[in-house]
Length: 128
Image (tube, rainbow, N blue to C red; front, side):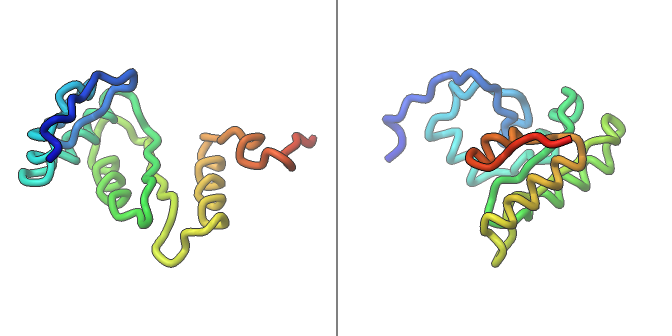
């Protein structure tokens, strides 16, 4: 069904869990996604590559942060980046705005601050 879809290269590199390498997306055809579903996922390999390439903040955007555990274990096992960390965005049975804002606050206290003016467009303002 997906065979007629022709992938194109994107502007943002993707760390593939199929190959464990950086990809531009141009090879993400039906065969790629079939492989993604049917063969071993190279999640740890991709995470280690991200760490080696200098990435250190991982945000899991999903209904429950199950992958964050694997990322954190890889970070702790890595010799590359001891300052890296992971944050989930939502939790099972706790997926509302308050949970999302709590996750943004977790990022903020770790030095990664969102654009609060966009998070609170009608109410955000700087104070001394």
